[in-house]
Image (cartoon, rainbow, N blue to C red; front, side, top):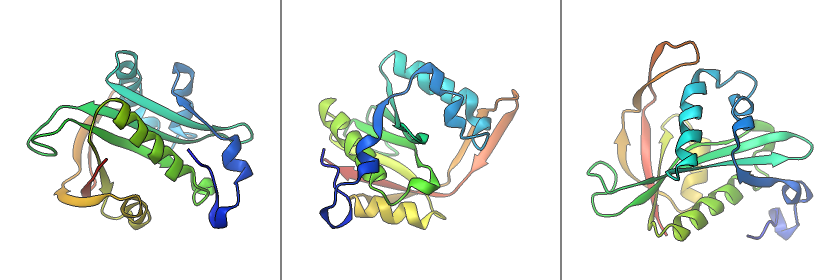
Length: 178
């Protein structure tokens, strides 16, 4: 994967970023200084699913800045809501820390997702993007995704304090055939 920056210049910073599979020691670090602590048990489940081959959790790590991005990739079977005919790769928790956006890292992580989907024989990438997140929506559309449905964004989980949490963040469901 090429790592050229704007205007064809090679980004020295991006060249030093390593994208790798998440390891157990990363779990506290992807809480991003407490911002995502409520998802601690969700992240643990993602890690368990990676161990049995259902999910690939990728971490972007800079030698100077630590973890600067993440993305979870889950193999899914056809279902009537998202893809009635094709298996697909579901992208979630696609994050690049604010100070590191606009440097090509998101594009590189998305290319990694596409390569993993191709390797797994999955012809489709699907993700949900919060309707309120215009910057992410623009990024995904520029990466070739198209909207195909509205999602109420409703889900429940058990947080790090063993409380049931309910979140609802209306989203656009986007897909890209590869």
